[in-house]
Image (cartoon, rainbow over all chains, first blue to last red; front, side, top):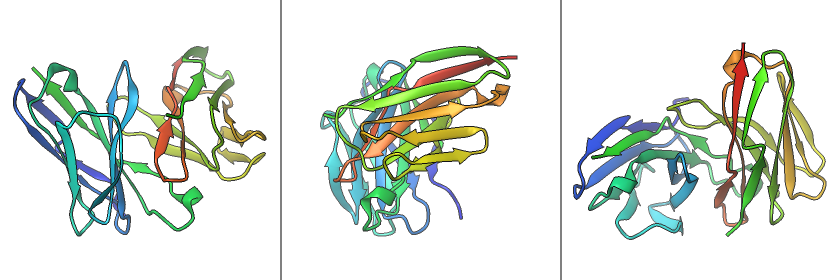
Length: 116
Length: 110
């Protein structure tokens, strides 16, 4: 079974630009979550999507947005990039079983975004 | 929001030594997960714990779900150089939102 796939792996942008990152979850997984990871802040939750709907949202500005497609693939978008947006962006999928306790998240390798 | 505090923040050990780290929460979790992250990669699940008091092993790794359900422990025996990385504890709340610990950075000196 293929794992979580994130593209691209690396991205360089300049301030003010916008960027779109893509995530393909494990086959059969319907929940996709996004995280931002920086050395100083650790793993920060961005948002979670299930059945094309945002279920949970972290404490990030509106410049960060996402969506999920009918095949569970997800994209996140960051507009008007700032230097502080440089980070590893991780996507995780989970099956979202009826038993909450079994909903383990499986991570992709991440997209390393550098904003110059 | 919920906080998961891990300690120690970093560890430098000799190859062959045993390692212990722990994670505490301000509230109860029904599931505790331990992940390892290699540089430039995403976290990889090591061990999942589902019941208070549960002790689970995965090779040289052993993790325990604390009786209070507010803490968990991870032990690595006879460390080797490939154990280097950052170890995270995590758990989902009842709304399936995951919380991650602050991470323990492990360095193994050959």
